[in-house]
Image 1 (tube, rainbow, N blue to C red):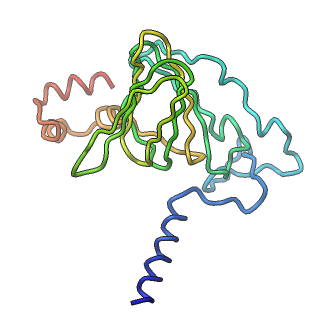
Image 2: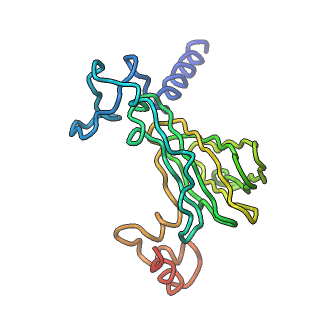
Image 3: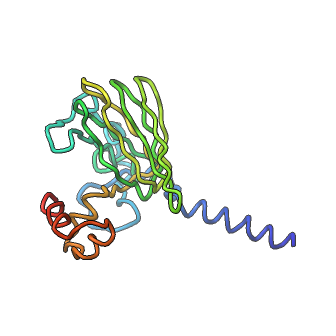
Length: 214
């Protein structure tokens, strides 16, 4: 019995480590721009050529352009923008919201997220997995913080009449994003209309109208 418990614990530890970005095996691995080498992350620059600018990014003070269909804009700070992030298992983004703008329901398949409201009022929430599909939501004010667990559908909406701004920190250098509507209605090639009609329990014409927008 004791051996079984130890084995289960050991497998749990292995799973935990396997579910996160791998730890670096050196001080840093600054991403090498333009490298054709494919690794789990990006190829490293020669450490002797690394400079302070490789670990610095400027521009998060600049508002994102929210003049789009959803009224929000994400400004990422990933390894492509900040090469020193490579292999460190973290990333950052600024999110701007026009009044009543939405960051639509989406998923980060490789990262949990913590959101800090810098300006405005945000309604945020995430949905638990099947079978409950429980909505957990809250209205946040300036200075409030909210956490979105890894892999769960979540969203933000500006609940005010002035622009809102938030900073999102993510637990992966490449968290990925799957916007639910874009993925379901804008896939290449399209998912068959009869599949979506049955899944959403609507007429195929409605599915076609939605697909035409993506």
